[in-house]
Length: 234
Ligand SMILES: Nc1ncnc2c1ncn2[C@@H]1O[C@H](COP(=O)(O)OP(=O)(O)O)[C@@H](O)[C@H]1O
Ligand SMILES: [Mg+2]
Image (cartoon, rainbow, N blue to C red; front, side):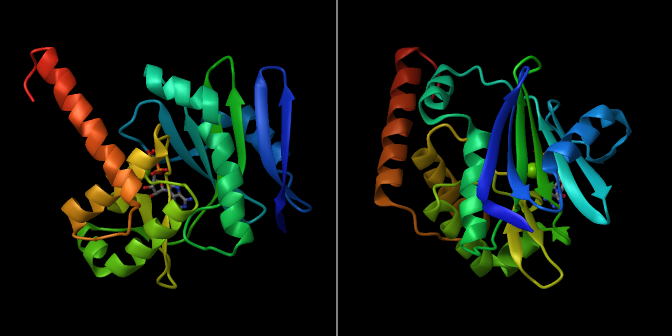
């Protein structure tokens, strides 16, 4: 059983690893096996982002998703935020563990996250969610569940940052789960972005803190002003 209350954080050589303690599955061992045999795994989805890879693996009759994110952040403000708030994925494993402890079944589970300081790659092991991605029509059909899902996510200070059908899974039991939570920089701005995407693209209205929308307006005003000052089109 996964013990989401105990997340082991270790460091060896150039690798930092954090993983959920489990008496039956040693995620560290699973990760090492994956690394030793990376090239032979089944690539699930040839991503449109060149530095990201998603693999499906089978271990002891259980399916897992292995994800590699080799994206390096160059934007100064994001680097600064990361310095203050800590690594996004290492925070994510703790936040998602809290969701699991609260039996809040709206997202994927994250069992291990690793960061290789040399290659600057993040590695992750998630649970595999049986089901299918949502089509554009599904986004309308399941609007209430999607609303609940993102509002709950926001209440844990998590954001999607990339709202589209491919980042939701409809399970055979008819539940909606969100996957592919990404680095957002300013969390409050991203809450507002999620809300705007949902409203404008799918006509789904979620509750979003007034403060988030306020910040979004300021940020938008600043962007417009900065472009005007640089003589660019707004
Ligand atoms: N935990 C998961 N369970 C089931 N399928 C998944 C899971 N994670 C990813 N997938 C599948 O792989 C696809 C790509 O994964 P995603 O995390 O969205 O990567 P990308 O960053 O390339 O968008 C998803 O659209 C989904 O079909
Ligand atoms: Mg995706």
